[in-house]
Image (cartoon, rainbow, N blue to C red):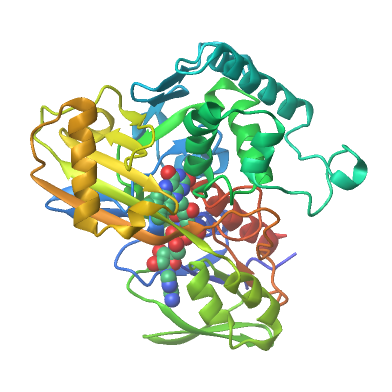
Length: 444
Ligand SMILES: Cc1cc2nc3c(=O)[nH]c(=O)nc-3n(C[C@H](O)[C@H](O)[C@H](O)COP(=O)(O)OP(=O)(O)OC[C@H]3O[C@@H](n4cnc5c(N)ncnc54)[C@H](O)[C@@H]3O)c2cc1C
């Protein structure tokens, strides 16, 4: 058990992982100091101003099963029902496919939704429902080939495409349901994505309570939603949060860690490095004992996410707050007028690798505009558009990925971040859980 009086933890990075760790520690009476290199908190999920309009660094959404993140938001003063537009499970690929969960308990709501989905043959719907029942029977754990169909075991992961083929999910089912779902959840194409991680998400979203599969669309920006409130909470609990104060170096000491920023050096009993993987690798690389951890981080591949924001005249709306398009550049569209009262503002999200990366940002925006015209008859031109291209938005969530653990060979140095070991793909929930795990280790 660490002595809370002498424990002073530095946290590198004020994204969701770092701020979750900071709140958890501050709430338990530990002194924390957060160092954030950017001008504002939030990291990849930060608020961005453009043309006097509040945007996010990419449209984000959360699921009802993101329990750790939702609890954290509440702990720092948020109100989930006010902060989010809550949409019961509904997937709509405009004109091609739609699925809506009835008000039944889980997993019946999903089974009925699959069996009554529009845009699929009866046999495809039956196969989809059977597949979900089979996953439930497997407890959402892939069978180990070595055990002849038993469950568990390391290294038994396969790609989502292989799993779908094993369960006779036909092309229409794959293209209209599983592929969009996998890309939305894992930001990785099905032929590269980990089946086990997708099963972890399906287990948590569809298997326990109906509200777990709700989609939560934030009404306020992602910096305001949690990191800024978290900073206030930390300061009220005696901690400090420095922005525009990046950490340049880390050095292990006999009884702690030293960190260097532009403002000088300081010593702490513990450090949680919650910077993105490339920065974490750079900071850890000079420390010989961490060579294996650095090698794990270096071996991660990444996937992009592009968000195209378009400001149309205020009367322009979409049929739903969120809907998808089938086999188009636009994968998911969000009507910010319906979500956050920003009338005429649309967000088009294009996740994972693909041919869209061959286009310039202007060309991509023009494709998005043309598709909005073809699909919804929007003939007006947007007053402005803004493309946010995050080339390294998330790690590529491949099968059997070895992600670095939160605990490193140095007991006083911990790692937090969506890329560290865990059940989840690179998500806000994965990031928050990693931060909470670090806080638990320090207060153990
Ligand atoms: C466009 C986009 C859309 C996404 N959509 C979703 C979604 O819908 N749902 C979902 O759950 N997830 C989504 N994600 C993933 C989600 O944003 C991330 O998983 C999550 O924000 C990662 O948080 P983190 O704290 O691990 O890392 P980061 O957010 O990267 O935070 C790291 C922080 O460290 C700071 N930093 C860097 N270098 C230093 C340094 N030297 N010193 C101090 N600080 C430093 C950075 O500025 C940053 O604030 C999306 C990501 C992107 C990019």
